[in-house]
Image (cartoon, rainbow, N blue to C red; front, top):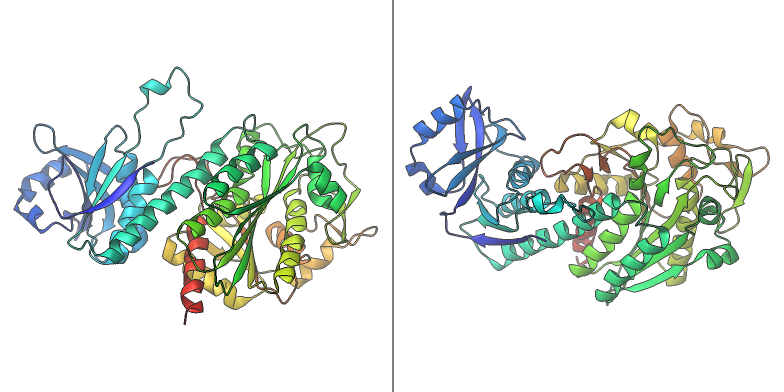
Length: 497
């Protein structure tokens, strides 16, 4: 895990600065005033000769002495830089500094928000997943370990923000690690036990229901999805209850540790990416850890319904009917629409716990739920749906602040009829057109209309099968953690007024 600190010392063996385009010409962008004494004309001529453009994701390393190196990271067009521009530029530089022990980042960041964005990007970019490498592991260069952020201010408030960036990166790495772990090593049970160990260290309450408890207590969705696998299902609950908390939010994440599609078997091409189908569960548990570590004054229940959707003689069949926790029946027309079944169980139980506590201020579910989400919004933008416009707006503001890309989608009532079943309360699939919205409407059936609710479909952005970019590696990304954290922080500040 990398560490981050503030420094007032501009000198560094490895110095990261910005490179941008202004009026068609390259310009060096940095927060260090003394950088101006360098022979910038010669540097810029050299960069131009190297073909540098200053574009985002471009990183150029230039020797600046016997062992010194100036790392130029692209910022795009010169001007007032958005926080996400700084975050991604720092992340791109950090990714390109594997094998380097420490570096100083001196991008054009002056305000606390800008400095924090650089710290977040640099930390998030310094990631690698080498746990399962054998003979090739020794040849791999380790990620950047020590990150210094140049700043004229080292105030207590700024130091706290830097510490927040460290905690955020650590828990984002946890999500990425879980997603990248192969299903041979991450089963519903091992996921639950691994998270229990971390939660216990943070003094959080943990509850794990095994397959027998799930069946006896009526969790028909989780049981039905998991019944085809030799690795039985689990329901994990992690609870954070700070003293004098005035609000309680439930976070529910889809936890399919591997998804073959069941008897609606997926094509072999691309099925290996289905180890990422527990990205929602990883995100909500990591969010609970982050919120607890930051000691935010809001209570959290994080729920991870965990199952492996496999093909076998015990797998649920098309036309099977399952009874969701709480009593609603669902005709399983498509066993590959399994995520909504496990989520339904957990959503109802989360509501019930809220009623027992006497209050529940909102529910957020996170899921790699539909291929239709990827068709509609691509691989870098996730969807948000819900039943409360104020809650949706609050989340979108938080997502914008965090730099994560979410887009609001509707829940059209006219599509609800497509979920009708002639033999059960509803079916698990409806119209293929608008499939992302139909899935959202299915989940809405298990939400108390009076409870503010958000549904985050992160199917595309949760797992990067393309090239690395900015602070985003290939594989698990950790999307939704930063937005959820920013939302909870915002609500915490409001509750204190």
